[in-house]
Length: 153
Image 1 (cartoon, rainbow, N blue to C red):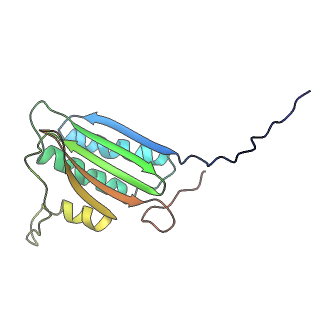
Image 2 (cartoon, rainbow, N blue to C red):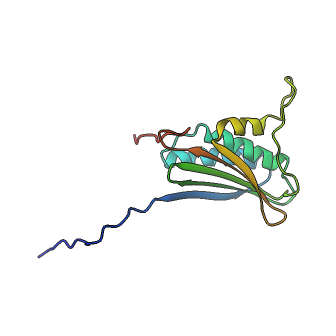
Image 3 (cartoon, rainbow, N blue to C red):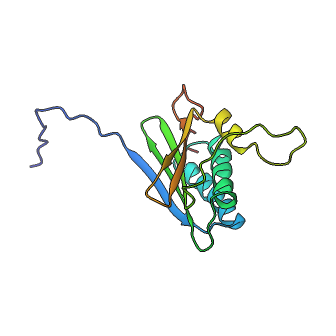
């Protein structure tokens, strides 16, 4: 005879933490791969890629352009806790902290951190153990945030 036994003490539902981390070469190809793999992971998690895809692209491009040290890779980390997606890119140039700058109107580059600042709910830099630094950005995933959950197909 099967019996169902119930636990008399109610349990709180655990908040799932989803994370994705990988190490990539500090090359333009590595930056492109970071964007593509992040987009695919967000799709797997049923989260839209916008604006996270753009933020990953900018942070990865900065890591390979301004944080590159020959022979050293950068790391991409995505994780979701509750209704927040956190994007982290760690490179090996902790001595070069990023700073948003206004570029000339006709400049072809130099606006990446301004874009991150505009798209993210919050962003910042954390110095790591030398020689590392991590640039991070957070985007809401709930109905009140910048991202919303994509319904299953």
